[in-house]
Amino acid sequence: MMLAYFTLTGQTRKFVNKFPEVESVEIQPANPFIEMEEPFILVVPTYEAEITEPVNDFLETGQNIALCRGIFGGGNRNFAQLFCFTADDLSEEYNIPVLHRFEFQGSENDVAKMEEELKQYAQ
Ligand SMILES: Cc1cc2nc3c(=O)[nH]c(=O)nc-3n(C[C@H](O)[C@H](O)[C@H](O)COP(=O)(O)O)c2cc1C
Image 1 (cartoon, rainbow, N blue to C red):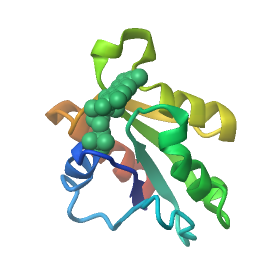
Image 2 (image 1 turned 120 degrees about the vertical axis):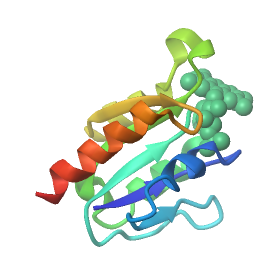
Image 3 (image 1 turned 45 degrees about the horizontal axis):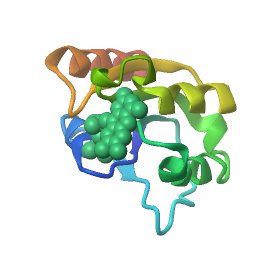
Image 4 (image 1 turned 60 degrees about the horizontal axis):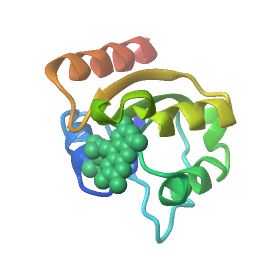
């Protein structure tokens, strides 16, 4: 299991870096067309759709949609009903489950949730 993530201000990268044993790839706007070759969890922060468009490009590359086991959405609860809408929109568009939602670089609880998912898929 790998992690693929998008980040603008680095919070999501900090969350992903809490799992140093897991291989990760960063989705870069300049070249989002990375073909994954093994299952992965997508970790994506919340911004308007024009900003997160590279994540759509990434998912639509190769077999990436089929290989994506689920989405961890990052956001800020101050956005209330818009909390983590990017993860929700991607989930609906590509029929991939949202596994968890977290704020900024994630709490201990969020890290534990990811560890749980990684352990489950390792079996
Ligand atoms: C312009 C802007 C708009 C945002 N809109 C939302 C939003 O609608 N919902 C949400 O949950 N978080 C929103 N956020 C918060 C970010 O998704 C959150 O801080 C995230 O951790 C940033 O991740 P990054 O540092 O990896 O880019 C917004 C942040 C900015 C700067």
